[in-house]
Amino acid sequence: MHLVVGLGNPGSRYRETPHNLGFWVCDRLAESHGFGGEVRKYQGRFRRGRIGSEDVGLLWPQTYMNASGDSVAEAMRYLPTSAEEMIVVFDDMDLPLGRLRIRPSGGHGGHNGLRSIVGRLGSKDFARVRVGVGRPPEGWSATGHLLGRISETQRGRLEESVDRAAAAVRCILEEGVEEAMNRFNATPPETSRESSEEGKS
Image (cartoon, rainbow, N blue to C red; front, side, top):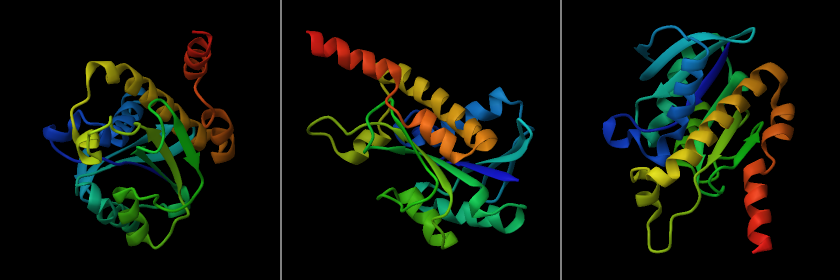
């Protein structure tokens, strides 16, 4: 089976923050594909279902971001899956708001949740979908940016990003990482239009 892991922090305090976009993507996939009921296991929330012809597990680690690897390692121990069949979805400040970046493997890039997973599994060989949240405004800390509540202005763009990230996960499962990279790593059409309009003014 495939395992899709959305990274975030548990609890209502963190629900509406950019750092929880991985959770949002798993929520979207569960809703749109009619996944089975949620169970509490593997130190997380877990649901199982199908996307296309693929058997898929969705995991929301409840260990807090910096210990995400504990939950993932436990799931790996009991589920019929492997690192090569896993997709991890998480926020990334190095990408502008609205951008996605898909990779078949790689390092943690300074993201503490990903760092924990790589450390616990001893492997970097799993796909990842990075969802851009942009850098904080001048004078803001990175922590305040990631863990602050999302503004109404941000929400629309982030919801669009979540939709695209969920579509990217489906593409990886059904058509492979390379096809998903070709389709989703490009600048979103709306960003191109905005840049074009700005250039005319």
